[in-house]
Image 1 (tube, helix red, strand yellow):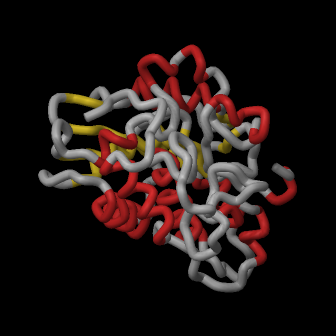
Image 2 (cartoon, helix red, strand yellow):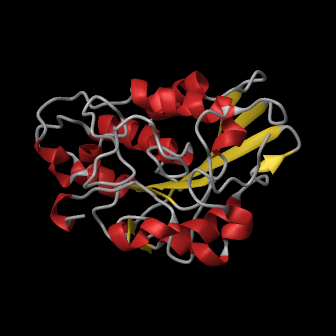
Length: 263
């Protein structure tokens, strides 16, 4: 992927690392995959209600880096629309002083995330996913967010603020809204991370991303050219193909690989 047009959140499995080595958070993942999984590794746990009947999204943020309420509200709405959790999905916000406030690697995100997790990702009947909002930037400063394993995401607000153009269209808040949903889309396995879709909606030049500009998983959302967009509206919804993929994964008509849990 051309670094000059990249703001990446995204993650694919280790096998895709040679294709996307500069914009994924899988370095060092092979040694931790046994218990931490790859992005998409808890897809079925989210889509099924036979064991995990509720879900908590743990948001750990550095002082001064609390996410926008619109972002967490939107994430809750999107997850609730696709995950089968009859006892509900909740957001748990915790202010956390991270010692690193400069440069983050995928290993840093993964290790710090696991140190700060309040629960294991699967705890009795509750599924826990986590997003950290640290100070500082990713080692590739064009990266706005990254999913590093089956339950852990990081969002880099300093880089998000820098991605805002002088007209604030789109605004940093709108960018954060889209990036956060996009990242959790990768935790859901989108697009083709832990499965192969029957629909031809993966962008061939940007694996793991949609070719539909109306999908929150659209590849260009992670492009630095986002600062050249003069609309304050960015995609924030999973499109029909994304949703059909998730339905197929849930009912078993689409094979799902690399899962830490199966119904």
